[in-house]
Length: 209
Image (cartoon, rainbow, N blue to C red; front, side, top):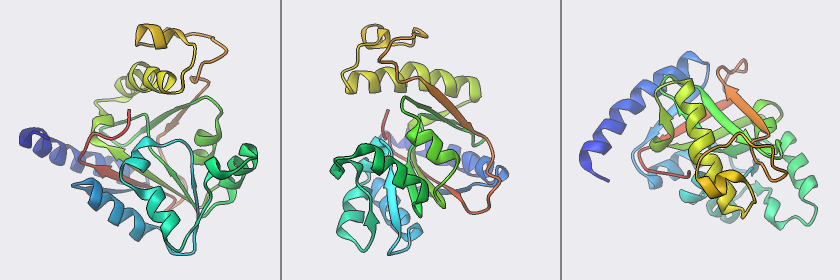
């Protein structure tokens, strides 16, 4: 990464961390993926039940592999024949792992979901939610974050899943009602009423989409 971009991200991250604190969420800054992994493992007590939705950023820092190799009860939905059972197990987990499709400079998190298992677990259920978010996801304000989620994250994910949606062909949101749409639920996390529930690791890398 260009050193000027790296420094800019470092400074911006401090603003984001203050925004998170004002919203009763705990933020952390990691200068690299390796530092983010170390920090994440420090935040997850051994013996914890841990699960996740789809999260390319979480995979990018190597967290699922580390949890499988460590002393944790990692609920890997890909290993479940009954995917619904794996998704339901998330609501009673000690820790739920996620990223965000976008976030604002003052700490609001934006997520779009197709099946709602991810956004519903973020909103309610697991004792702790741990986000891993690259600085490429940070936008000026909520309007910018929503546009990023719909016009960057959603089309890329639809293409990744091989879906038949207009955004796969155009590269941007067409506000469709396609049977394949993954833009079914929108969650804006603007405040946490529960102390110590939401933790966000900001990583000075481009992670996820």
